[in-house]
Image (tube, rainbow over all chains, first blue to last red):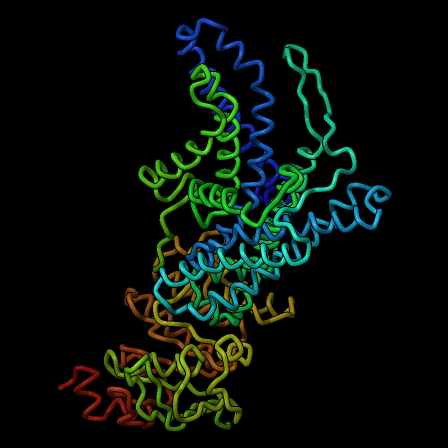
Length: 377
Length: 238
């Protein structure tokens, strides 16, 4: 068994993928069961239609949508949680790093559209290029922001860099707005139409009335996100640089006594977090199709909530938190009006995300998978 | 036997606090040199100044005639200065193996790393039994072994140990001091900071006595042990 668990294929592919599948299936099952249970309880109150039947009819689709957005939240949340793990500092400008990634990706696709190359290129190559460019730009932006706005404040009380991060967040929003309005005259960027991303893969499952419909872009989004998560797991647990990141997170002075360049490792952490945020931005753009400089705020805040829900500083926690939050959002958006006979609509879905944040902070401040800080002898 | 490490008139500060007030000392290659003194005398600050965790405002730190006064800590380490800090500073959520790997962070030769690892396990067989355990789950004595072992992974030219006997049972203190002596016999130069002055002076070649940031006395260890002031203040002999 020991030999099996130290096998690299198991450690870096099978285990993380298994974990992701387990989290996705587990969280979906729990929420689905809860919803069905609620449907049975409230069945008698609603006479117009059979509540349970209505709930079950769209349930598979709701789960699929929830997982899709959940993976985006997870990918963003990892950026928050990595930086927190190393610096114990909430990088509130991460939502803008995410937004920049999305806008850069869309602008690249718009450029291809403009030159006419978009319709002739393989659609997956276009997406891959957009994601790579988004990762590069967001990653370097995150490193630059750290150098300018956080590094000089490293010895300061903890509130000071936090305020600097919030300031940086507003600065980036307006800087992007300025650049966009100077170059295109508009604040919005719109994803050009191309390829077959909006089409559905329809899967008829016997026993389920409505066939499962997977939108191709959603499948792509989940696929890319899983790839990122597995890659990150390998980077953090399987490489020397990853070990150094963990060492710096646990004890900075000791890490420097090992010969680790702490400033370099902090930059690398921002680079990785920023690149993940940038990739998430491009994926989000595929789903949202229209971006503006303020689009990062809500996904950023929700990803932060996901990170806290999972246990901030804990990478696995960020993954789980993101999935739960995405599912919750999808469930509440789809079922709120069904359960309340239309009194509350989908626009109230965010109440759940932030109610969760408050509940977690009250009941389990260390998060679902968070542990009390390991004893330093 | 040249001077491996030399401090001349070093002044160090923590903010406005003047911690080291003109420390001058040297360590020859192959020696064990011990710094003794009471709490707050500046022993740890001296080590921290050498390893670059704080930088001297005045004076010079020379390693092999090379000025390292303002060199960053991670660079000093790569020049072969191992520093086992007070309180051990092991990584609680890395395994014993990973902690040792971190000690060899600046070493790029896998063969050398393997050799050093074998040496560490030979010195501290207990660590080999605990190899997959998290550092934070080890007992105090095992953590100290890990901290020293980790310092050795670097194959340091000079190993600086800060209070290696602190908080350990007497039987473990003996083990640690035997190990230090053995390492020195195998060629590692050692700069040792200890509250346990008697033990420190028993294995050291030379010693320095620090008081409130200054060196008040230096001599061969054997002579220091017989010095009246040292006996009275640090050895508890009237």
